[in-house]
Amino acid sequence: MLHLGILGSGSGSNMQSIVDEIEAGRLDAKIEIVLADVRDAYILERAAKHGLKAQYLDCAPWKTKLEGPAEDECIRILKEAGVDTVVLAGFMRIVKPKLLAAFPERVLNIHPALLPAFPGVHSWTQALDYGCKVAGVTVHFVDAGTDSGPIIVQKAVEVLEDDTPESLHARIQVQEHIAYPEALSIIASGKYSIEGRRVRIVDNRRR
Ligand code: GRF
Image (cartoon, rainbow, N blue to C red):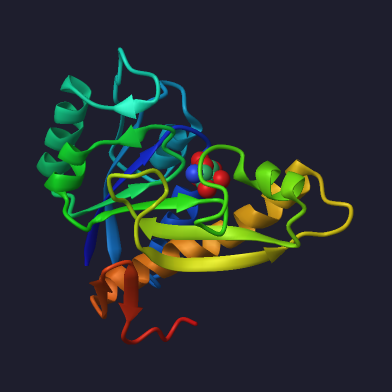
């Protein structure tokens, strides 16, 4: 069983998709703690509704990274909660080597693009502006770069002629909510290996 620590900043719809799969008995995992760097983030409310341990993590003075005393505190809280796998679910900060070292090859992120295309923010708008016919979502291990670690799961989403950033993002989110639980079930199964950039999945019955 995976012992998850979820870090978020916003609505928490990805966390919800993970909660739903766990509650339905389809994902062998337990959410040990939810941390948000935004005091009134809806992810904290969602967590409370499901009786999950959840708290605000003050990440000042930095706005875009998790470093220094806040990083130490984050690691302490995650370890104390018994977390073995860290799930970044809409966490709007760069995580640093210290956190990665505390959970080696066990920090995951979801990015709303088919990486390596369009890292960074508003990637669905970038895909639309570029004229892509296909967009999508990537779940990957986190490494020291930005949106650059080994890829676990990707889902493609067709770009429609009349798409707006909002409509495309909405369809990408539908796929996000399938992709994250799928990636976690691969990790939970233990039936994978990381070979350089490639994550080789030995037995992937969910596909
Ligand atoms: C998602 O689009 C995710 O891909 C991105 O941030 C958003 C988080 O949404 N990294 P939510 O908080 O899970 O609803």
